[in-house]
Image: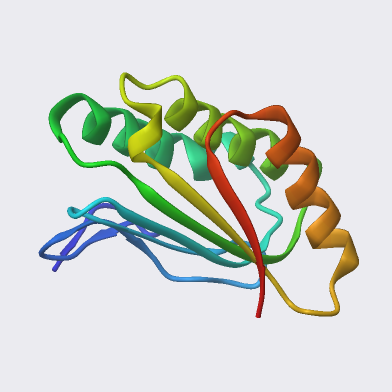
Length: 134
């Protein structure tokens, strides 16, 4: 394990491993293309939080033939986080092989707001995007 900063930790076979906090989600991005976001997303500076993740995705897409399987299970995100979530998904959609990528938007069975937000994003992209209730 190698600490890159106070927030970001690199673990063997893992490109990014960010522990969750009260206002930021847990993020894991492994070298096999599995990207998971879990928790709440209300970072004070959304650019600072999401930019390294997006750059890691870009680098992965430039060098790896495999697709990215993105799993999003957030119980809340603010509008600035929503912008970066959309940017992440749009990055997959605009890649050389968009059909290699999948997005799984997982919501608590009772959470109509997060389901609606997932449907809004789903309607804006042309990529494999499923909404699942946990």
